[in-house]
Image (cartoon, rainbow, N blue to C red):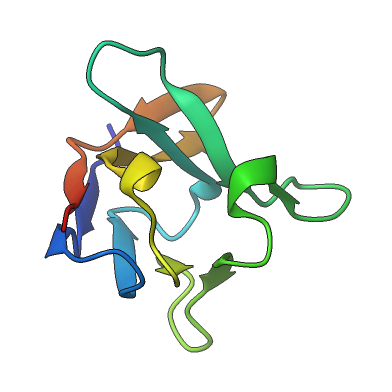
Length: 114
């Protein structure tokens, strides 16, 4: 069993920045990326780091969000979010795979409000 813990969410004003963290319990897990789910909507991919290929971003976050692994600790993945917009309000989840099973964290809430 692999646990994922997200943190870093909060209430911010439009234009602000946040950095979300995802910590996975196993160094052998593959942290795939970040998803989000706004109230009443389907969960959507925000940013993923595929095992093969380049990083992919949701079109609406390109140029504002950046996904990256911690340089010294591969069990930690970040989502740097800049110039936040009202429509970025959602619960953000990270996603990881280990031994062919996929795992989700409990999510961290991001609210962008003026």
